[in-house]
Image (tube, rainbow, N blue to C red; front, side, top):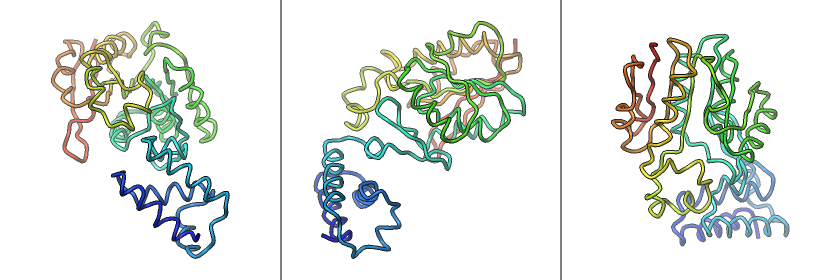
Length: 276
């Protein structure tokens, strides 16, 4: 069994089960099984696959065919050009969330105090810490998620203070210049309609934002009003159809409300400045 033959067989299995991007998925899983980068597969396509390599590849294919996301099999996901470790304790960072990071970078100044609410893998907080000279803090209600985030921070040499708490309840006074969050925003009633990769494997605490999917937004806005310095920014990633109701939650304390769209033209990031 050569590497090329293994790739062909793996791709066919994934295609037959209607797994998206079957060839790419087969390449990623085989490279992971061999402990190599994907380029190795093409430079050594005629190389015989070792028995242990075939065993690992077969196990990874089986897991993916059952619905387990590729990122949870390889424990890796790229975000903003960096490699993050991910486990089923954290949401898999999406490319769309890079729009939130970009919007934050436009507003952060050297020496600012920045808070990421709902750290997950730490992708947002770590990226902001590495891309700016801000003092970055991050919270999460899940201690298991914070363990993953802290590990990513150490490995990527980012200075972020990770704190276990529910949203931002551990802070009591205005102390931040910018608060960012990719909150849980899926309505609980939508659970059955989610892809199995999401529904069955990603952490519910990071997905569901209450019956309407909007409950966390209201709490974030209330906390941000309390915790931001005058003129400070709140930036939140938006869920599907959440723009109008979330904008409606912003009272007279907020100004300079802007919306940034993703590559599909969907409203993705809401930014607002506290004026009190």
